[in-house]
Length: 181
Ligand code: FES
Ligand code: FES
Image 1 (cartoon, rainbow, N blue to C red):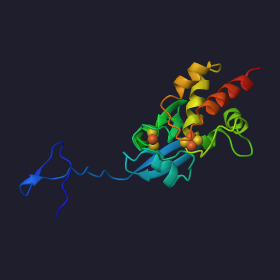
Image 2 (image 1 turned 90 degrees about the vertical axis):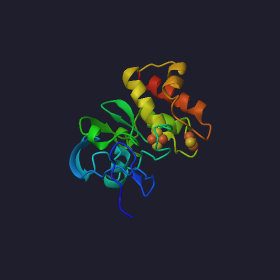
Image 3 (image 1 turned 180 degrees about the vertical axis):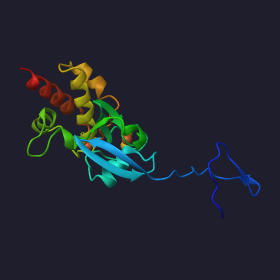
């Protein structure tokens, strides 16, 4: 059986529709700025940023959830804006400063949001925590003193199956409060 290359429409093959298989593009060298450090990877241009972070750069904070920009588990910041890295191609990421949750703080030195999530016990299984914290960081960058409804609106597109929502909102409000002079 021979491979069918993508042509923009389905081809007929032996009297029936053949599946469309996207034409593979060549691996290309990309220079990235991740958490303030210059990194480079050689991948196909359409490779999702999430795959590069987890498979090539060993940054596993961003999680694979739905793979369709629906859950938020994979979120990262690109120039301070939240992006769903499961659908964000590496060719788009080269133009911006990428910040993952590892770039916000560490276990030894958590940033205000990470500390507040710990203090408010805002994680249950923790699978959504990356996306929640990244979305909250993006919110606090554009609005350092959000109200509870504004926090809820900012986190709306993030799914938490454990029901930690109220504690997550409390944690974001706490981080905001504690960052005030
Ligand atoms: S894994 Fe990216 S939004 Fe769900
Ligand atoms: S804490 Fe488990 S999915 Fe949110």
